[in-house]
Length: 342
Length: 297
Image (tube, rainbow over all chains, first blue to last red; front, side, top):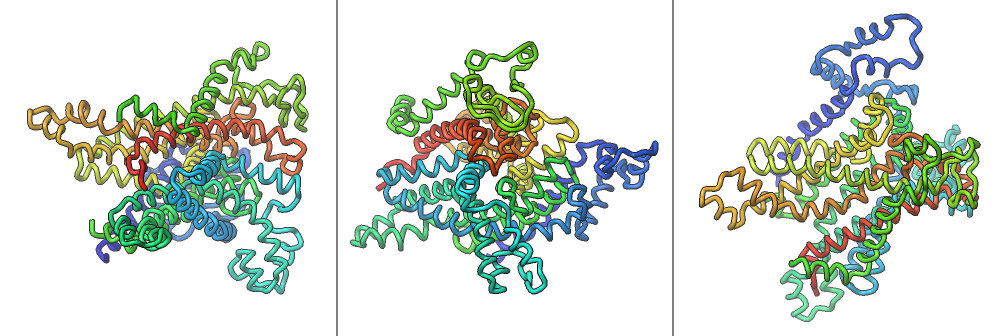
């Protein structure tokens, strides 16, 4: 087991190095002059101003020198200055990450738990009416673009019924949070509200988060349901499940005690990866619901071609994903002895 | 499984048949686009993918005799956009599937054929590409490319292909490694057939058939991702007949969506049904080709 973990840990710097090369490489598609243009917001009045920038930032230097400078800054926590955000990218991430994490945490439970339950239900009733119903429900969700489903939710529950608002907080709640007496501990509004004992703010935060959570869950159920279902079906054909049946166990015990634990092995990986993906993959959901998190800001920067900000965010997300995958892999090794022995 | 049995299994599945019918419907719409929504005027004939406008005022207009699906912001005709958008969807989906498959095939077979450090290196590169969430990576790359190439179908597609090929490289490598162990490969080798001939004539045709079938069913996924880019303003230019682009107008009318439902519902239905059709057909094929899912219990 230790050898497995150590091998995975040794891979980590290599992967992070590769990710950074890839991101910096994308920037090199642009000529030095196009890259210099990324740093200026107005048309320069003086002739040769762009040449000065190319000179000053060494944009004409060989690739490895530029990369060395850039990665040196990244390691110091300097991801560049954001034109759209008008502050350093690292500051933006610090400000917006808690919002994204809050949304991901709230979405995690319904997404994973219900997805798995649907899969088990569908597998234990294979080819029944229930199975067809669950699978159709899931495949429809799988076919929705996030933005169409999100906009439909807003059309029905915001524009028509006015039950759930868009955004992250109502104005009064945002003011209350910014006020003197409110301590922002996690910067995740719903949890902060609980810690401060402000149930009204908690409820307000929840009302804002419900539609994005429904959207994220429904569109991802199909994947988890599908993996759980096929894994369950495979396990249910194993000899030890037959043995359990042969010795006269009730169907419930066969499913719950013998089949399900073993069927969960691949599901853990997919579930873990989905969670990790949530942390960085909320771009469209946050944009539609006007939920000011990292994804929202990423989309803003991208649509205004603020390449510096986009690459900074991408580097941060790449690092999160690499680390998250590592954790999932190691957990997988603990759960499934076959992995660490191979 | 024989072809005949495959067809029979397919047609026993009502959802698969529904998917097939939907698909044929979209094919018909794509082919008949010039008849269903004839381009207007000289400029329209030059580039039929430009949606005609009826004036320039901002508020969308509800469906009428002249505009069966209404007009969206800027008076772009929704019906025209939905019909010609079908062509765009097929173009994007098919072009991307072919491109990702080809890259995946080349990288995957090189890795599996040479093995050793070549395999190790290529697989690490694949892992690095996969270290990004797909859509996020594509958004990043298309933002960079757009600064250079400008808006358009090609920019978005390059960005999606650049990060989309990795799955196939892995799958095909795995397929080839599995087939390499088969007896008929050993037989070919023992009578002295050259390695490359074995790879091209025996291994690849036997290894990649399932992967190709499954890949062709992912056209829907690609259309989804591309629509996402378009929606964020990183795909086609404003006014191009593209579903994601058409729907992105709805973002500016969220509080009034109850009134202007048609700017979301018509193009939204088109894209959901299109993707659903591919998913239904693809699901059926996966069930047929995965023996583990057959008749347990």
